[in-house]
Image (cartoon, rainbow, N blue to C red; front, top):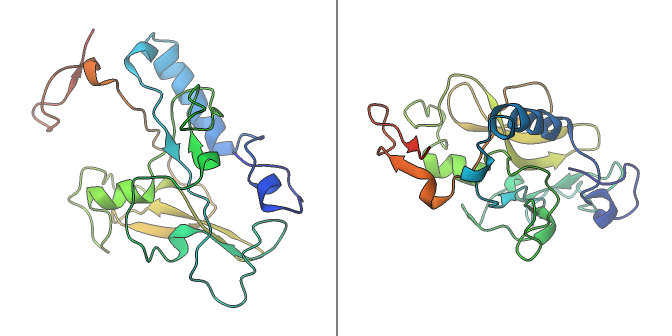
Amino acid sequence: MYGTPGSSTYEETHANIHDSTIKQVIDGWYKTNIEDKNYSSYLSDSLFCNDRSLSSTVPSSFTQLGYSREPTAYRWYAAVNGITITCKQQNDRFTVSDTVTGNGALIYPVGLITTDEAYLAGAYTNDSTTHYLYTGNAYWTMSPVYYNGSRAYMRTVGTNGAANNTTAFAVSVRPVINLKPNSLKSGDGTMSNPYTVEG
């Protein structure tokens, strides 16, 4: 989600007012494949982190203002503090109804994986074809990298299975949902014995 284009503050630019194209795609996927098939009761309203906190390590040409056409780098521009599964800013913690921990900005409890989660799965080397997130196709994460004044860069999991910086162009979308703990009936998560959902 994003705020008002052409705004003159970071807060207005990063407000959660407008749905991005990718959010419209995953909301449509959720409605067709989850809600319309009566699977919503198995899912939890867990937060999805679109970490738009600013990077502290940037070239001098970056103003770090985060609005208009100002060059701005976000946390994954130089993730010097390593992997984290926390989300610094409440405005970036996307939830449906939870407004204590999250922002309550979602219609459905669906999002994208973060770069941190992809790294924890093994997507951190130039050839990461053995982790469970590898598909052979490039797909988006929720992690912004930077805007250089003319192009926006996001993190993707690339065709080699590694997380990369990519300009905003069409790659695959892999929606992420979170099951409630009591939704699992059987299985251990392996290919030969996948998890089975109760019901």
